[in-house]
Structure formats: structure tokens, C-alpha cells
Length: 187
Image (cartoon, rainbow, N blue to C red):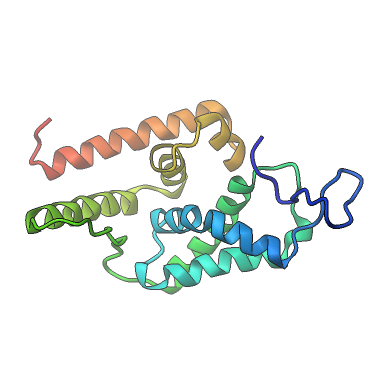
């Protein structure tokens, strides 16, 4: 079922289910384990690079502040995604910038052409994601960037499975069109 918000800990008192509420030290462990996932989700949901670390912190602050309200049966990744989605929406409203490129990791290379090609590819993907409506964007990012299975996405987003597949199919078609447009109609 995946990681849950309540972690089993034999050293502390636990509730009837054998789980203890997430404490501050557990939150530090969760932060270390899921920082990269939250960062990628926020980046792919359009949070500008200049404020992404603040947004990551906001996600974990919400998790900490509202930890008693969350259902312990759900997946932690799903919970973090839901919080990140709301945080991203807030940050996009506040931080309107004309160009929102996610940073492209620099690889050890002596070839500047490779660096330029990676940055151009990132710009194309970012522009494509900016074109998508939020419903398609969420399904596309979770399926094709994060590798989540579509049934899990449908449950997480609260939509029917066929709707999730339909949105993913439409987003992929738009992506092919965007790539084709970039390559001057080729493909």
C-alpha cells in the first residue's frame, strides 16, 4: 500500500493500530526521504526555480501542522502530492514570471553543445507543461515524469480511471504535437 503518515515505532507508546503519530524526528526522516519527490512535483507543476525550496518547505510545514487531520490509511506520496499541488497553485499565483524553467542538472561534460541541448529540451518541456490545463498536467506529470500507475493517479486525484487514461492520452498527444512543432513539423 505504500508508506503511511503514521509510522510504526516500538520505542514509543502506540495507538491501537500499533502506529504512533508523526513526531518532529519522524518529520525530519520523511523530509530526507521525500524531499526530491516533492521538489520534482513542485517544479513540474510550475513553481519557479527561484522559490522552489521555499515551496518544498511549505509542503512539509503543512504536513507537520495538519498531521493529525490526515487519514493514516493513504499513501504518503499521495498525501505529499496533494499538499504540493495546493502549494504550487499558491506559489504560481504569487510568483508570476514570464519564463519558468526548471534547473537542468549539469553533468560532467566538456561539450557545451550537450549543455545547450539539455537546456533547450528543458525549455520545450516547461513550455509544454505551461500550455496544459491543470487536470491534464497533473495526470501527465504523475504518469510520465513520476512513473505512477494510472489507477493510483485516478484514486489520488479523485477521478474515474477512464478519465485519467483519457487525460493522459490527450496530454501525450499534445506533447507529440509540441515536439513536432518544435522540430518544424517533422515526425
